[in-house]
Image (cartoon, rainbow, N blue to C red; front, side):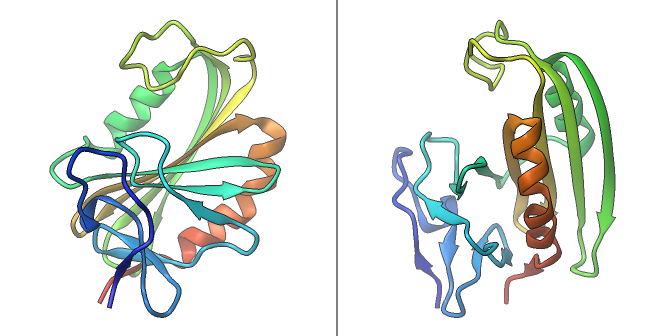
Length: 174
């Protein structure tokens, strides 16, 4: 039995809109579930578009999004993320897991643009130079699920091993 873990801030949120915790301790949304890395915590989303947030002590936050009816292709999301940086170096790879859907992982490092307007996805910041966006796009059975981290190079390097382990634990929900 799946129970709601987070209290949503969206208008009329439903269980399907938020990350849940199932009886064996796995987190899930959109027809997938995964193991929370040791030392990480889950918290309610800070915005109405977020399905949840994973807090990494001393290393920032991974935002989780779910798009049941769209959300764009992996390529269009990667292009949009790249456009949010005025200078960037990107390396990404597709992890083809036996779970039956692809997981796209990306690392974008560079100077974050802070003048992208309300739809740029990034709030203005005094310290926007040399940031890293680590993202995972999961083309899950019930829509696109996105894990997105934005922080310093040191924070990204510190969280990346646990982030990758989390992605290897992804499975289709029963």
